Length: 495
Image (cartoon, rainbow, N blue to C red; front, top):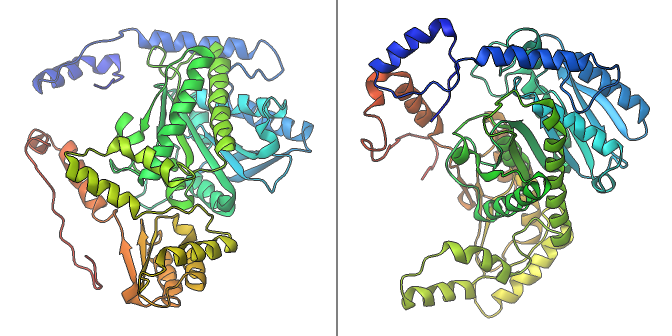
């Protein structure tokens, strides 16, 4: 089920087309334009009620930018206001960093990427007020990067042109990160990627708490997927306790739809950030993109309750792992395993007896030494010590991790293998660079590449053709097609 906004002068033809195609529809509201007019008059009226910036009201782009400049001067000791870059229409993309210590890990708030979702920038501005008034202890432990309007051209256009405008104002292209706003954001995130600890992207509407992936129905690795669900449950419970609002959590592609180019996916794949959520704010459809201003404060309050609950849990566990022992990991896996009989149960127990667990950091040299001692104990009396290293890590740390593995953990009595999962680089240049780095450490026979992205564009093109062509739409579906087989040829060993 989906909703469409149809201009009154096109309604007659809309009914003819949909009846011809035998598509059922219901008229939900015949006076939507009147509601928009009333809403916009209320916003303008409340804006004129005073000169001070009202954090419980909506504001146009100039007002938002002026407030950012004001607070950066008043709180110059803990704020840094700067521009990520310029847009297609030559506007600055302002971001503000709030911190008592700029060496600490960074929490990112991304707001306003979809222009018509006014509640998103409003929540970001309210969060700035929340932090500057030191209403959260998180300001002592982390620094915050807040981007109130990552799409300023589009946001401004919703005030001056089309209230329902969603995108930016630049012409489309098939290139990755082509939009100037996307380039500016991704370039800056690459500079601070080693410090990123959390990423929150605020949208509206629907009251949904989502996590990667968006571009595919595939799930992240089981540890991360369990962690996403665990933190989401903590967050949505905190939201309900605040103002009794129900937020549903789950994979973005399941709760909403499959979509490429989502920032949360990119941040997860590039930097491995696991506190990483896309939030569809209030409401569930009553006001749609016209959420009344009195709901800005409670919406912001429930978001902060969720965020603080997440970091309280993180501080208590002191780890992003699902557990600190093998028993903890098994407890998180057991609910997903179905055992048919005693024979399978015995095999399952034998499997766990072969496992051990060591928790460490890829950027700590001492941890590699500890892993070596751990492995030696396991290998004692076992003959040849064959070692296979499976790197399910952010691509940005592949080379450094592989170098550390080669220096500290190579078996001297058996073979060594390196398996790399996820994209082997972001493009041809980064792929070649990574291959060159690895070739200095391992022979080609020792390196195995697993890329579950192969064929993605081909499948998407098939889906695009189906949805764009009425002739195929009735036949190209799950009832008529059992599978899609993609054959390709590569100049090197691909299996």
